[in-house]
Image 1 (cartoon, rainbow, N blue to C red):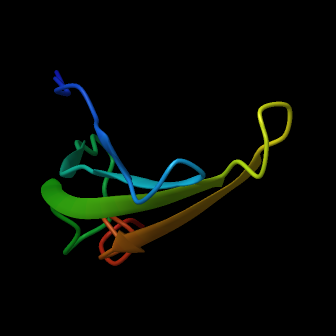
Image 2: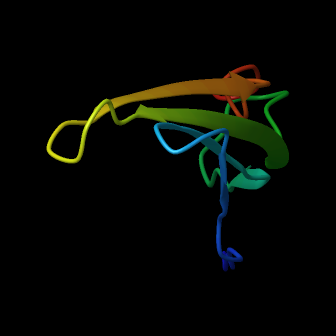
Length: 80
C-alpha cells in the first residue's frame, strides 16, 4: 500500500491562536489462507480526522491540543 500527503496548513485566527487539521482516507485489506467457511478476503476503508489547536499566550509558552476521530471500523466487522 502506498500513501502520499500534501503539506498541511494551519489557520491563524490571531497572533495567539491557530487551528489546523489532518483528514486522511485509508484502506485495509485482508487475505486469509486458512479462513473459516463464509469468511472472504475483503478490503474496507476508514477516514481518520485530526483537529489541532494551539494557544500561545506569550513567546515562551504554548498550549497545544490534538483531537482525533475516525469514521468506520475498517476490517473490524469482517475479521475472524
